[in-house]
Length: 198
Image 1 (cartoon, rainbow, N blue to C red):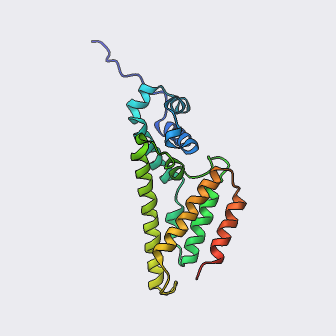
Image 2 (image 1 turned 120 degrees about the vertical axis):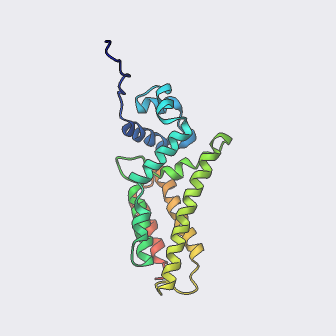
């Protein structure tokens, strides 16, 4: 009886390959990341990439999920803070720190990726915009709760302030990618907190 042949074992770790793809997307955005750059970073050829991860768009979505799970816990932690000022401080200081870590590309994968604007990249862009809008909604809801608890004044506009805070957060990501230092970003946070009503 002939011994049954097994398939060739994979010579790579899928999580490691996904981490490497995530860093390419993080540095260059969705559109700026070419398949040759991705396959080289991941240590696999194009057919293997397609077989394991699907197309480039699906690879980006998987990388984005991994980014959210491993590099982006700041919002979740911020929303758990007792007071609205602490929520904002935790969110913005955590964002400034995360976006200027030495071992990672500077900036934010969600912001960098959304800068793509060709027709091919529209689904990715819309997906990233939706993710950011969802974060803004959660922040607005937290501010609404703070109003009910008496932590914020009754005339505080939760919608406008959530948009303002998220605009600062996203702007810091762009600045970090352009070379702003952690200290410079923390100075921006200081300015926001000086004007906070509570």
